[in-house]
Image 1 (cartoon, rainbow, N blue to C red):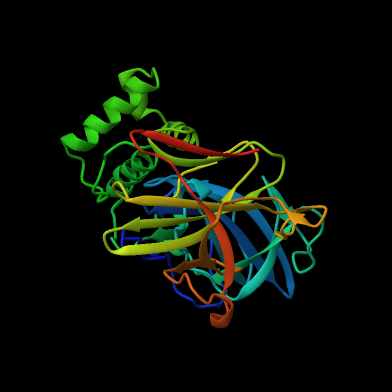
Image 2 (cartoon, rainbow, N blue to C red; image 1 turned 60 degrees about the horizontal axis):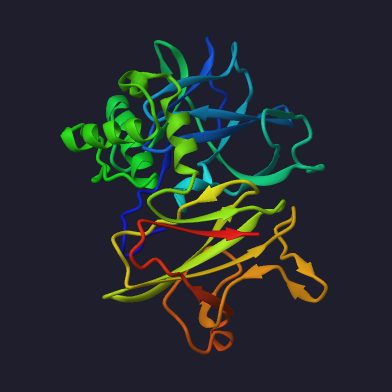
Length: 331
């Protein structure tokens, strides 16, 4: 997604689309040269049989083992995702569909999804041969080095958590160090914490909590899909959907201090369908109308939604006057 408020870099899989059999003499690794914490799932096809496995987490600037030992499959595919706390971070997606699970999984029949499984779009990939073995590289348009990706990843999560570490460029300057120091102080962490191997986990957990800025928090037992409309001097833009899982908080991507902020959300079931109590949908909104889509959207339309093939939703004005923190809770 690109919008008037932030620049979003499209993640891409840095690998050739060749489907020929690839040699593998050591563990298969995934190296993340993006500014996002990434979860990856792999699909292996050999002699017509397919299996999928995941999730393999790769922190910015880090390499992790995905498959131990030699991989002799004829074809290899990958699907990548990022935590919802980032908002909308476009990923390179293919048109090859397999099933994936939750948590750590291995599926031997990934063409027929069972309970708790969902479909995901995979892209073919050919690992690069390196001294450490076959490696899949994840990259952004910025073409970060490992060190730059690490620092850009810290900057990005600090910004999501409400700290001013902009610009997100992977260049470590005093502004980034000051933001880290303030974050550590606010969270009662020792100065050495930024060097811990689990620092990205610490940042992710902090970014999911209400803090400086605007957040949605889900206090019910089912997921909620939320949308936001932002008014500034350039006009009003509504965008969604943001998934807010039970017990989690999500901060939508909002730059600066908008003139007005509007929110709409609806609860969904395990299949992504709107929930209802009786004949009424379980939703949180108001009487300010904006157009939406059933899929991911960014729209400035407010009138004649149906005539344009869009859906009309009532948004609520969010009161954040004089506040540094505003939270809309779904109860």
